[in-house]
Picture 1: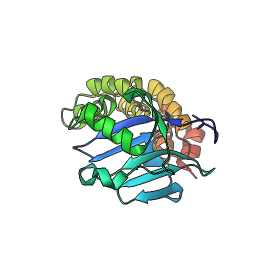
Picture 2: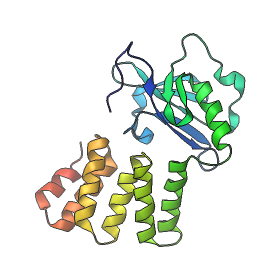
Picture 3: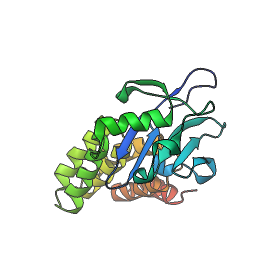
Picture 4: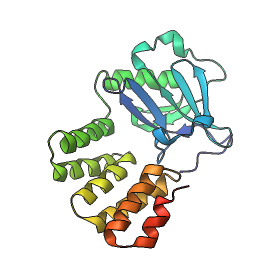
Amino acid sequence: MTPAAPGSGPHPVRVSWDPVRADAAWAVPAGVVVEDWRGDEHATAVEELVHLVDADGRTVGFTAFPLSDLTPGALADDAGSPRFDAPALGLQGATPQEILHAADRRWGTSASDHVAAFHAAVAAAEDDGDLERAASLWARVVDLGDVRGFFGLGYTLLDLGRPHEAYEVLLRYEELTPGNAWSSFYVGRVCERLGVRQQAVSAYRFR
């Protein structure tokens, strides 16, 4: 997704709320994986809040960590505070403080739906060894708009011995997250499994 141009209004963001396992929240445009955001594009506003700034200097999202340390005064609104639309919370032109307060009122100590599905998928695979259920849960993560679900679904399909399906899913993830080393690595693995040697070598030579 290409963020809105300056002056065209607040950026729409998807809010992720994970107060227990990660003690964090983040709000990013559709298709963005916050873990992949390059460190040199971070602009710290206060100790617990980091603005995500794109290559053109536009603030397109934010992260908050640790949530347990946040106080109302820590994220006080000011005239220069970036504003975002958060449709899932019914907010338009909201500051990070307003978004975090609304998220806290909605979810409290529970994770937002896509984050809960993410953790359930991990548990199904790692704790229960149920890869079929994990694949179903990763598909739900995708349906809920979290692109990380493509990665989880891709490597799970590979583990299930379904490399052709895994290939399509992992290519989609690679398209959505250019520059992600893990997506290239797993594309390489699935190409190797499919016997497409040259494509596998190209993927493993991740820049």
